[in-house]
Length: 227
Image (cartoon, rainbow, N blue to C red):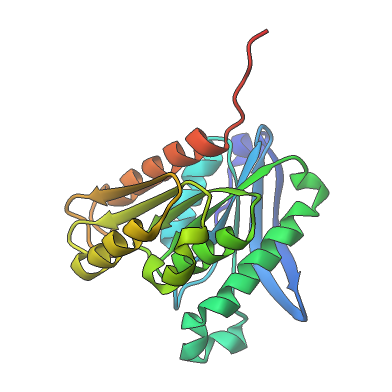
């Protein structure tokens, strides 16, 4: 869990652990909204991970520092996560992500904020499937993702989509290239040289964070019109 220091807290309008009702299920999460935030990024983690993913938290912290709000939440309950097949039930994960999005939109503190998705591993598939269903999602970023698990829906994705893959993540890189060809939206495939699937190499997650932030800034940040 990320805790801002005293100076950071002065620039945060909301930072709480939250309970998100999706159907009859309650999912746990952490919502941080900087004072100047106009955009909130919802994270969809990979299989076997959770809202406590160190890598996603690192990206979220970077985004918070750039005045983006972030919602990290568990797509599965603890009991559900005990069953391995649930981690690859993309339809279930998509419903959870869509439900969390609707919950966030109804939250007064998030009023008028645009929403984007950041998906990792299998979470990228649920992010893309949810984006295909939700026209209010205006940008998607995938880190080491499995967009191929949402192949049948990729042509319906209208949100600008960035696929980030490590150059040494050979199999996943090939799957991303195939998925990239199916996307008909504004899109880009960024290959991070010298990075493996988890981007564990020094400095690689910093590159991911910067690439993601630039994408969200380009497609989600409101354009100021000079008078």
